[in-house]
Picture (tube, rainbow, N blue to C red):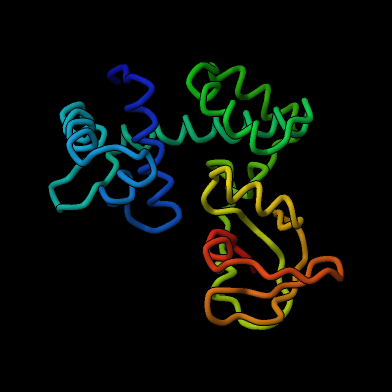
Length: 209
């Protein structure tokens, strides 16, 4: 398998995560996530395709078996790194996510296995995303939830403003919440007997069941 630069590995990982969360990876999503020009992403995808990591013959970006293998390894390394940083070292989940982007590229497999063991073989990362090879997470975006009681499963997009907003009000995986009102641009919820009104943009990034 060809050696890839960190940026190219990051594209592969994001394609996998888009397939995982949305069912399909689109160029427009990659442009938005990485804040890059269409020309830059086009060159990167051309390179990944020439190396056999993606296939675009159906006008969709699909990972090949080699692409999936590498993406899964990177995602496992990232999510286990987050667990190590939060559960063992006590870092907050925003800093852990930032540092895990660096660590995911350097851990050898035997070290990852040790991290997995030390952290108790977790099912998910701190944000609720499943560790590859373990049971997936199925739910619905909070923005689509009707009035009633739910449990937070996952923070879908792990970007700082979303993580910070969710953490501030305690909207974190495993927390029980109630949807009181869901209409227009706002969603009214209750967490531990406290009521909060959150923007729909945040509710769209929280998966519940």
